[in-house]
Structures are given as structure tokens and as C-alpha cells.
Length: 293
Image (cartoon, rainbow, N blue to C red; front, side):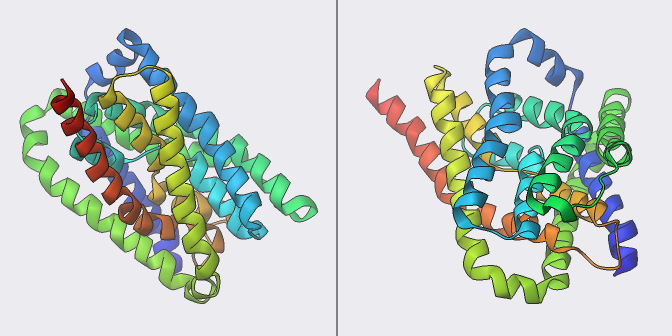
């Protein structure tokens, strides 16, 4: 298990982020400058509202320190490739989804470490471990920013190669995601079973709250329905693989996955259960809008 946590897990995350980079173009970043309002609404939801809502839910369910920190780790993570796919299925603004995922992922090396230190200090109190903010920032840079930039560069300078390898890499990335989530659950199976009665309802509640919060904020901002759908999904769907990896960084990448990784692992499964009916509802909204015209 030590080899898996210390080598396979970080390399798996890097590969998944590389697959994200392959789907990006420079225009995805230029769009943020040209059409900033929707992006700012979505970014504020992810960076500010998401941790606040998660903190309130953790307090409401009375979770213990390790699980509470695991939930906050998940809240600090950006969206992932899954949010882009779900936005497409919901007939949302896919370009906005990609821009949010890309920029927030690149910023995660700056935002995650200090927020993580605050969460550790609050929930662990006097027993809190010392967080090497600089060390975690460097690791996140190497595991998220560098692979994204490499994927972006490959698509920019070798588009023909990218078009051939992208489908294969996407399938491999999905397989790695399932593998990592499964290992995190198996490694903490006893704790998982013991806490399942509170883990399942708390994570389902979190997903519903976040998707609902994203929807309401975007609607109040007066955005078009396609962007409302996207911001709702981007607020609710986080990169659980990154959450599991950050949990490993926090525990020093010991021989086993830490309990900190449990919320992200369970979330990685339940997000599809909650997202499925939401996607169908979003597609229905589009049909209703057309019939009302």
C-alpha cells in the first residue's frame, strides 16, 4: 500500500490533470477576460461559498475532527473533468465549465495549502499537525499545474497527435479515478462501514446544498440558463481524486490511505447518484423554456 499511496496516487492524479490539459486551449483562458462576469460568479461560488456551506454542514452533522477535515479538503478542491462532462450532458455552457475548471485548478496550489492549515488548526486544535504550506504548494504545482500545462502545450503544438491519443487517455484517466476511489475505501473499510450511517447522508446533503446554492446564486446574478446550469454543477462537483491526494499529503503519505481521504472517496461515488436526476431536471428546464416561447 505504501507504493500505491506514495507513487501510484500522485502519478495517477498527474495523469488525470494531464488529460484535463489536453482538452484545453488558450482561448479557454482568454474567455475569462473577455466574458468575466459569469466566471467571477462561478469562481466566487467555488472559492468562498463552497467552503462556507461545507463548514456549516460539518458543524450541523457533528462530524469528528478527521472526517471534518476530510470534508473541508474536498471543499477546497476545484472541479474536475467530470464537471465538464456533466455540463455538456445538462446542455450547459461547456466553455464556461472548462474555463472554471482550468483556472481554479491552476490556482489550487495557492488556495488549498493555507485553507488546509486553517481547517487543521480549527478542527484539531492543540493536537493539530504542523502544515508545511510551502511543501504542499510545491507538490500541488507539480501534480496539477505542470500536467495541465503539458497537456495544453501538446494540444497547441501537436494537435494531430492530441486528437489521436485524447480518447485513450480519457478512458485511462477514468479508470485511474475508479481505482483510486476504490483503494481509498478499501484501505479505510472499517472506518467507512462504522461511519457510513453519517457519511452517506452528510455527503448527499452536501451535494444537494452545493448544487442548489450554485443554482440560486447564478440565477440571482441574472445569468442565462445555460450558465446557471454550469455554475450549479461546478459548485457541486469537485475533484475527489485531488481530495484523496491532498489527504495523503497531509498524513505524510504513510503506508495507508488516511481517514482524511474517506469523504472524498465516498463523494466520488455518490456525486453521480445525486448528479443524475439533476442533469435530467436541467435538460427538462431547457425543454420547458422552448415550449414557453
